[in-house]
Image (tube, rainbow over all chains, first blue to last red; front, side, top):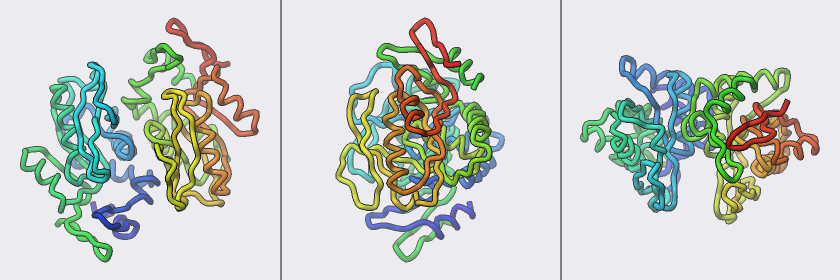
Length: 190
Length: 190
């Protein structure tokens, strides 16, 4: 998505440790009019696909998912991140390793909100190693539902998580894929 | 907001400990088309007021704030919840006591995203004792910005937080105010 690439180039900053800061529009500040444009692009990408539900993960995934859902008129379910693995039987859960924080956490979704008839579009803000997406896919599979596709706003292509999921047969359609980045330069996949 | 009251009556469940569960549309599952209707109501309430920014708090506050912002065409800034109070000088921060979890946490907003020229609408999903709102108001005041109003989807009027803020001179406009609730019955303020 050309407009997103331009926005990353003009407002993004690359920090040490492979972190891309886009807090001014996608993380701690949300440019909602722009998120809606991203939602329109997501709708276009999945035109013709039957989708019953959008699944995301707290916190900033919620913003992107709500913007997409406002265009596609679908309900959003969001997975919560929990420190403990001491969970009730009413939840689907999966373990996720956080690349940013170097720790493990458990993601959960109440069983009430996903069923075997659901055709799920997974949405998140960032895709790096794919750990969060793998946890969400695991949860969709536990529900017996179908993953229609995974769309993240920004994929760090060089971290390989998206390509591994593509190899595994999932449809992964990120709105911008960064192939290489440094403090001086950000290169997108063509 | 009549439609919200109806939705609480038809989909809400009152649990022990004064907890209202509206997970099916406002918390872990988000009925985004309905959230947009709430956004239209918020726009109507603040018609004629100049608002430059919407402030909320993670996680489910983000969903309501993005829906409101999509109607009002404003940027959203969201406060993060942190366990530690060991924070950098680039953040506004305030301490908040969580009624639900019985613990304290610190909310933070990067200084870049709020300035003295901002006129802020604070949005959240629930208003009970008002602790989260007080933290957000504290942060707006630290920035030297102006709180135009506070709107939560559901106010538990019987917990008094909203009325205390009104007494302190803040405009608090909740979309539904619950005066009394039990497993059998939910009564709204008229």
